[in-house]
Image: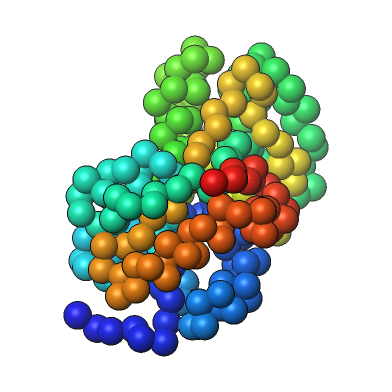
Length: 239
């Protein structure tokens, strides 16, 4: 197995990417190493976090949705010690820049917008699973909406496809939509339909320095990391 003595290698899902990137200077100071972003995709492609871990690639730190991380522990990809929830994320939607505000405030508003939309995008992550297996069913419009909905994978963000004009409406974690140029009216789901996801950090099973990785996790769960987490659209969670 290749060694990475001067590197601290991170795999993070898209929801935590903006916060993580803002914290890289502090992480490099903390670790004394170069922070390497191995991947920011939790999808199903060749470069996704699950497939990279399955191939035995080195990751000192893995940050994904809590349920996904627990499965990684079961699969032997992540150590069980010091697994820590570091942020909470709300799901949201967006339209292309220049489009009118869909003014979605209630479940009825969202139902009407989805029925009217010509193309709807969703991700391979937690928000996409919620959209396809629960949200449209609760709204009673699965048969009408799912045939015109598209899975956006391969590490691409839903907002990027909306910005290109290929879709006119899309769902993803708020923290993944907010940094994307070319989209507008990035809005949380109505409260009665919102699903909050926990994002959790763990030590990669092949990390050459698990103690250092645990030190980084403690930092991400501390108040020192809160400003970057909040600015990215997530809610920080203290250890």
